Length: 345
Image (cartoon, rainbow, N blue to C red; front, side, top):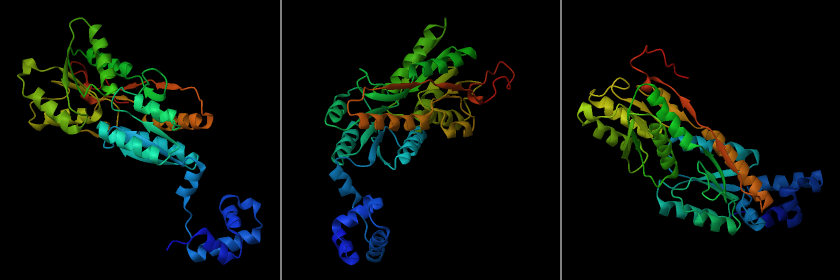
């Protein structure tokens, strides 16, 4: 049977209220009494029920974080940044993986609300924010992660993905490529749609350039490999001369497919650029060019906004937008020039 506060009080010959003060406000208790209570706690092996205490206070010291795909190292870095900020306030992060599934996303939101978390950080799957708005109206602060609120009624931390898509494709065009393939999906994910929009803008401003879309069911290495295999099986004259993948996992899958039979050389036959600049991008067999996002800073800032909103109650939603950065590596080297003309950075 679990040891209770009453058991500790009896062993230390003090009141239950005194034990509570020792646990929560030890400065209000005489030092010798504190020592006696702590000795009783140690002897009996008492463990405080912090969850019950937090629920009595109306809100826990945990923050729920729902990401699209926990296998993606980008979201791992987001979670690390969120943990760093939460730890500064002696709080914890509860991680949920929606796995790009709306039912799982909804289940996590319900669970976090039932647990009365301090607030919810979420990278939502679709554009429908009604569920999140209801959550906020019922008293649970919500901050969007890696997404901007459609009507700016929710706080958010994001990167300008339209600009990121433009950066990626303009770089490919600058290296002489003209037949660009965008590999990514599903388009219901706002980040994917925004990156495609940026790609289209860049192509529209470049006479003679063309863009095709190779939509994938999700953003995984396996889906990238399937898209790469489909491109590889085309006659050489019908292949694109560059691929912009919606994230680095897709790009790595495309690279695997191209390398499998050695029939497509990167970047000599097809240049390849990804998005996120995860650690694995630089370590790929052909180091991948990518669009860098400040993943850890996104998570850190999202918790910061959440704490402000939780403290203020009627806090005006804020939208923080970071700018992406082009990182050039061997996978987009201009083969018509000296191979050292585009150094990695």
